[in-house]
Image 1 (cartoon, chains in turn green, purple):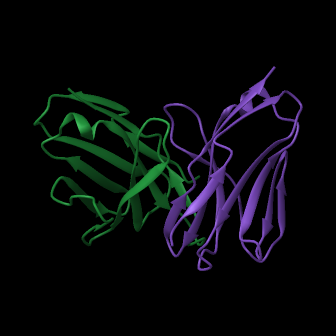
Image 2: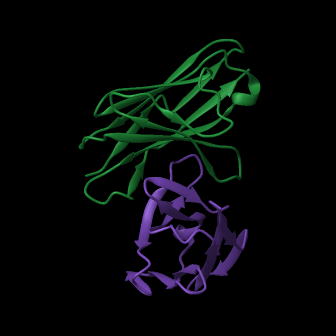
Length: 116
Length: 110
């Protein structure tokens, strides 16, 4: 149980285009999902918290108009990187909160975004 | 302050040895301390976790030691294997917010 998937696993796009990344909880319902960004050889940095049916909460310094988050159902959250630029190239990882353990998060496999 | 400090940055251990990674925190509101293992190009996977009312937790070869008064906790990997070579992150949560340490790249030589 507690499996989280992401799609796509990797994507290459041209500068100025938009890219959508999906995060799904496969065998459980997730009222809360989280989006992280990880640069090479660095730690995970929380970008935003996504709550089903409501607006996402963004961390300080994360542009909400650039990183659009939609959590339309209990099993799906999407992150859209709008007007992507090379500096947005990173590893994007989602997680979902699972079960009665309020603190526990299970992570997806990540999406490697490369912006040319 | 929402920070978790982790050391060492990298660690090389011989097969069969003990790997020890340390973390320290300041925020006394943290109430859950997980450790994650991450392989290159993959998402982090929960390894083991502990709550501050427990001083030690062991699962197989992995043990967390927790010192609440010192606000420190550590991961011990017994009988380290080459397959354990990965990046390890300690973390701490307050509510639903998860704060990660900087990570330790572990290499276990055969």
